[in-house]
Image 1 (cartoon, one colour):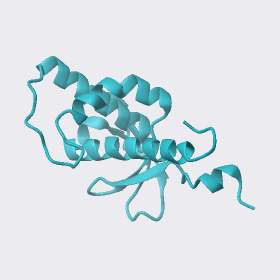
Image 2: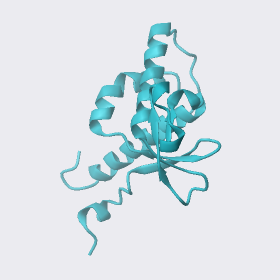
Image 3: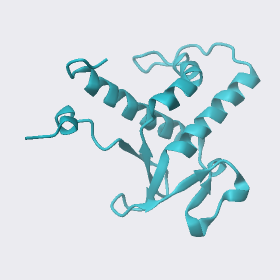
Length: 144
């Protein structure tokens, strides 16, 4: 008989993102992450319709753009946990916010080395895992 969590089929909480020369495993956002980042994610959603078509961008101040980018980098630093060249053998990896903390021998990579596209994909993957888990729990009696 499957356990409660197995019956919910919520997966392992990780998504894989192709970062070009390597792949990264991204943990799902937690409720606390989402609560802190809701404003930035809302700004991102505001420029894309639910059907994936871009809306006309609303005017955004440089300060808000910097805040949104900084929060996306924070998500990337918090949620990337492993890296792999082939997607088979995974090694611990840490994305760091401070260039001085980058250290190849310790698998620490400065977030500034990642492209805007990779950071966006990491954020989407982290958010998707959270949404999937919430949807799975909502189907369980008493879930919300």
